[in-house]
Image 1: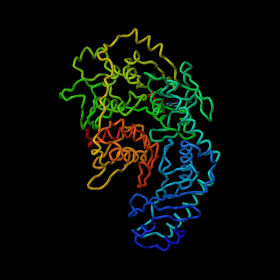
Image 2: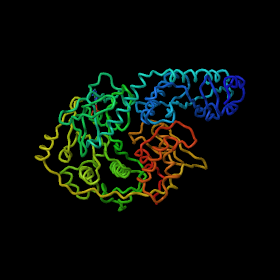
Image 3: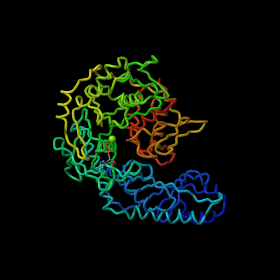
Image 4: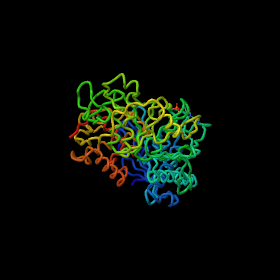
Length: 546
Ligand code: ADP
Ligand code: MG
């Protein structure tokens, strides 16, 4: 460890940009261990990566006593560091309102804090700007780290940690209570806008109906009351613009923990809940869609369906069976983003079209639960076809939830009945993926690159993830890319099924944390769920089966 980083940088002033490379390694800067992990090749390349290790953080030990507490505390400190470095070119991958495991920040079980930052090394005209770099690395960074870590507000840190711990505990009670989700009374669900994740000012706080009221216990907040969404088939109905999609989106987000002040801190959903939607144009590679597509006009087998350009309905059918294959136990579906012909077919259309190959979801939704234990929460304001198949019907009226199950069942019993043509839910054939087809090399180089929130470059492929709605941010996309590479190189062996491979991947991530994905190649990575890893794999055009 050298202790003359600032002096070294000043001495390099005016040298060619490549001389920055010589900084790689460990330095001591104002009592902080600073490691230059990677130096950018030129001023326009992605920023250099710096790791700061704070050994004298002085945090209260109970705040880092469990893995969930460590994840939360790291999230808290990263957000503070991001604030401390605002106005500088340094990138701190603290994330949005979700509290995820991130490579940018870790608190070790001995209380040592490690953060990794993206620092663009200044280099106008491809020359080392020594003085500026010396100030940035030698003063600004260590001062910000001291400020945010050693000077952390312990009371605020405790609130953050306890909020996350409570969410984990609430989520953990769902299965035993026969619930798929819980929305605490008083929660704030709407966001400011589609591009602004902060809570909407002046929103009507959530209030659930008495008939569906449950009380869960959180270790810090104590008893928390709210809407318990039961297992089975749940319908969210109501007039347009009354808050149906907002409620469903809160349930989608409930698979993650949220920061204090988000409004959805106590909105939790089972960890294997998966949002589904239509996505016409997506690729489908060897899916068994026979549960939803009885036959195709082309005569192709529907047990082994591939296309480079799926329709709205076949894309949603594919995503549904893929989610079940990957282990989803709750499906979240919104009429706004569904293919109508995949969801419903009413009595009159049944009379007119005798050769319809699509089996509407309304015929599969009950057997999916009865035979496979997969529940569905569905927003449907436009058709009454689901009233008769729903176990629970929640109505949103001016953002308030009420229980209209009994009335819905009455109406369903009195109304015109559609003919039920299909029964049961055929088991989905488990797929065995050829690991060699998960190859991240392109033109001889390994290419696993997140291009923002919506696109993953994986080898020769650009995977479009814009319709995979539960992905949080670019770093999670980076995590997904690395998880795919790991599946192909070391997890899948050409004999185990995809679901078994995802089990192994989860076990590896639980055991080794993000190191399992990083493997000595530092980058901003957030832990992905198995479902988003599977979603990316399923959209990989080069995928082959054994
Ligand atoms: P729906 O799906 O029933 O048509 P949305 O969920 O899209 O309705 O909500 C319609 C509008 O109402 C959105 O702009 C949303 O932000 C707003 N909104 C939803 N819930 C609330 C609430 N609790 N308080 C205030 N505004 C809300
Ligand atoms: Mg809607």
